[in-house]
Length: 87
Image (cartoon, rainbow, N blue to C red):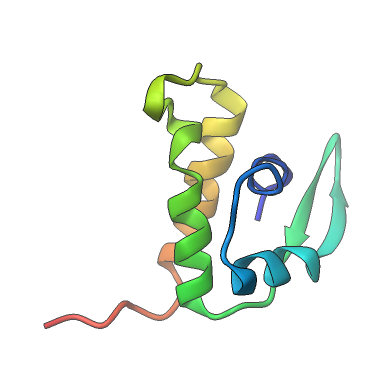
């Protein structure tokens, strides 16, 4: 997950499994920023992605283009994981 997403998630209240996945992530430096490699089930990643919705400017928060792009990149990565159970 992009570092901007990880930084945001560290400030919000998470479920114990989500917090553990975030805490056990491995930081990889990428140019000016970093990527956090998180090993977790697709369900945990989808839960983390749900917590990132405010980065899109929801709930009256100001939109920061770099954070918004980071959330979209994370969403694209999560969408390539195993599909959700459907009808």
